[in-house]
Length: 393
Image (cartoon, rainbow, N blue to C red; front, side, top):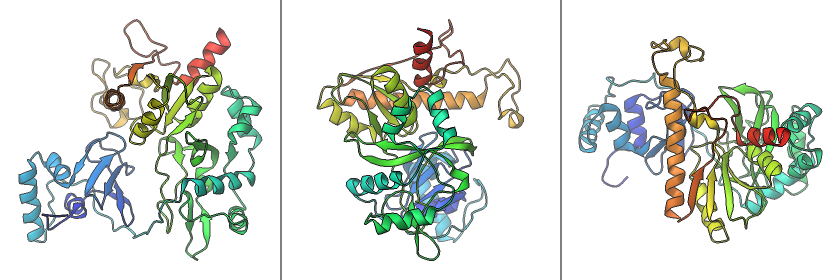
C-alpha cells in the first residue's frame, strides 16, 4: 500500500484477532466490534480494508486499529509503526491467541453462462427427497412450483461420481462456487453430511442460476441457511452472495426481502416481484439490480425484511445469551436484542440510502404489530404473512 511500510495483515496480527480462514486475497476473522465468534469479519488483503457481515463495521487498516484503541488515524499509524519497528505485537487489546492459517489459492469466478450451464446439468443429476418436498409444500408451494424452481436435496453419497459425470459431459467446474480440488488434485464439490438440506437456486434477472443457498436440515452455528461455497478449499471460489430475483421485471412496485426461498414463496402467494438478498447486510450487490429495474419501470420499493426489525428489546430471561449476561432483570433492556435490532435497522437505512441515490421511493412493510408499534412475535417473515392471509382470508 502506497505510503505505508505495512499492510492490514500486520494490523490483524498486532491486534491478535482470531483468524478463522485465509486465502491468497482475504481472511475471515472474529469481529472485535460486535463480538461474534464465527469469523464474520472479512479482511481484504489486496485493498487493505475490512467489513463485518454481522454489524457492518468497515473501513481501512488504520480505522481497524484506531477504533479499537480509541485513537486517531495518525496516532494509530504511529503506534503500529512503533510496534512493528520493535518487532512486537501489542497486548493491551487482545481477542484470542493467533492461529497460523493454511494458505489456500482460489480460482477466478467463472462466467455467468458457464456457472448456469454447470448448475443446470448438476440439478438434472439430483433429486428432491420426500421429506424436503413435504417441507416446501407446508410453506405454501405446490408440487409444480417446486419443480419449476428445481429445488433439490443435497446428496449424501455418490458425490465424486456426480462431479465426474459433469466433467465427462463437457461441463466446467473450475470457478463455479462449490467445486474445488481435493488433496489428490481431483475435482469434487462441497457437499457433506454437515450441510445436508435443500438446494435453493439463486437466479439472476435473466433467470440464470448464479449460486445456491442450502436450507440446512440441522442448524449450524446458529444458521439455518448457508451458501454453497468452496472458498476455503484449493481452487475453490466464493459464491459472491448474488441477489435472487423472481417475478415481472417490469413491475412498478417491487418488494425486497432476505432469503431466496422466502421471497420465492411470497411471490407465488402474492404475485408480486421480489428481490432477495441473503441477509440484511448483504446489500452491496443490490444497487446494480435496482439500477437495472429503475431503467425499466420500477418506481417504488417495499422493504419487507423479517419483523425482528421491530422486536421487543426488554429482557425476558429466555434467551440463549442469558447465561453469559450480567443484566438478568425485566427492568433492563436486553443488550443482545438491542444490538440485533440496531444491526437490522442500520441495514434498513442502507437500503433507504441506495434508493434515495437512485430516486426510487421506498417504504417499510410491517405486520403482526402490537399497539405500541412493536412486533407481537408470531408472524416473522413476509412469506409467513402472505400464507396466513391466504389461509384466513
